[in-house]
Length: 370
Image (tube, rainbow, N blue to C red; front, side, top):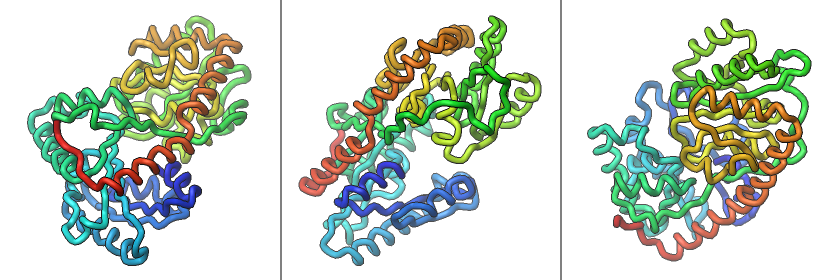
């Protein structure tokens, strides 16, 4: 989101403002980055769990901030862009005093059945929230096409009414190379990385076993794990048990401080939307091995700009073995960077959202259920 806002600000056509509702954990992890933004940031912090539901208590704060923005920028059009298509329902509808001046757009960053939609109670809550969103938002977007089928099945949405706009990233050509100083590695070792939330769904155990199998075949791969989550202690114990595993904890700006120095990124996920970590790796020319879930097959053509593998240690180990060929790694990496330039450049993505905002302002009509 910050990359999108930066491009919008650079365009001179949009003055972005951020409204962040987060728990103490969010504040500890992201507050320094938020403080560096060149635009206003409104923050509401929660001290207890679950923050998502406490948002309802403080939802009026958002509209208070919007009202302040409107009064300090009279005559300007205001678009409120929710970047969580579900939680947006806690803030909607727009207060009557603002409806003539404010239009809303909502984006969902991956909808998949494994996120609780199979649970009847959770499904009922999600449906309630989504109906509020669809009655109030002029446009509803998704970062990936597969999510449209899930939204149709569970919420009765017309797939044709959902606009697909992928995540974007600024191209980072020419940065990749060398080894990260924060990783203790032997000369000649190749670094495979897993970066993100540490839980079973992300498949860090599969990555560990895959690298172990590759090493059994005599290949000098090391696994670097960075991130946080409920499995942190298990990851620590695994790193102490296996000399080829390094756990770095949560790394600030891993997209530029760690990922560029990897020889491969591993993502053995159960489900995904359109992972930013894949875009970050591809932009630096780092080959990606991932499961064919969510929008991943739209990003990676196996054997051309990355490798798609079944979610098993053996399949990921086989992919890692293929990447032992430096010429093949470089070929995949170059094609990956080219894919980002052609399809996921942030300037082009920002322009698509700008066009959407302008259309929303002109039409100012909420989206409809099928």
